Image: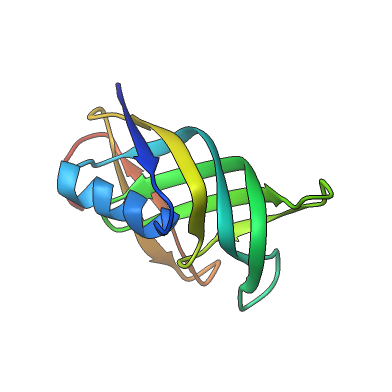
Length: 135
């Protein structure tokens, strides 16, 4: 197992940058270890909703968690406003860094993450294989 660290600068889209990093580095299975940072735009899909909620302002990232693979990611975030009110859900494209996002990512070559459509849930869900081959 290994780790990578990335610092995203103002104006970066967190989800797109992480997915690009996975592609460029040839990472087959990764997960978020930790993140500290802030957003000026947050796009979060709340539980049970079909569309995301877009927020403009200054938000602290108080949590970022999830999995990353060459075929997509599944990321959740919790953000807090200037009153400490917290909102959380699926992190979507368009979450734009305000000052920084310092992210540590864990990786492994022991298994491979792949996102595949699951007819039971209606979503692309995580499949884990014990090797690096595509199934």
